[in-house]
Image 1 (cartoon, one colour):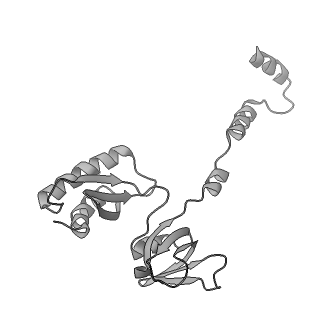
Image 2 (cartoon, helix red, strand yellow):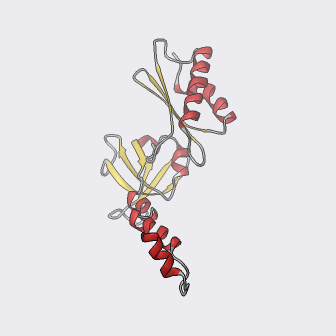
Image 3 (cartoon, one colour):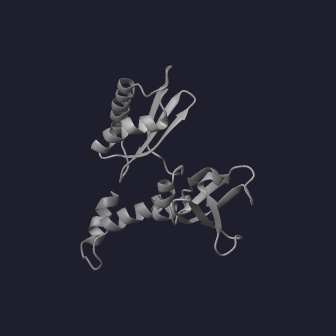
Length: 189
């Protein structure tokens, strides 16, 4: 049976040729999950073509499970799972949520800002933690993911009312236009 490293070895060159980044490879109960990304996002056609190419390469190289498997090639989504040091380094300065393995000192669940990440572990800062934050080795982390800030995203998105007002303002004649009353009247009829 192949490992996620074997699948990564086979998939990475195909993805690189297509201008995609390999984010992660996981084996989940009969499924191989290959997560890919690129600047600006990925469309469904690209995911489908990469799925066919990676599936053929896995079968050709014999690195998949010995029994039937399902291959899922997907984008990471809004909240990104963090598993490797390079994942953590990429999201320094972002909000994350994590759960530690049992037996690690302190609370098992933690949300806060990923203040730093190096080859050995991370530092998370959050209200209620000491000034330097909480340092965790990668081996102490059971699961971690980024937290998408819905409030900030919604604040950046104009409301339907604001869009309607902009359209109305764009149609309005310049101030002091003598024919504006006639045009407004014609528009209402």
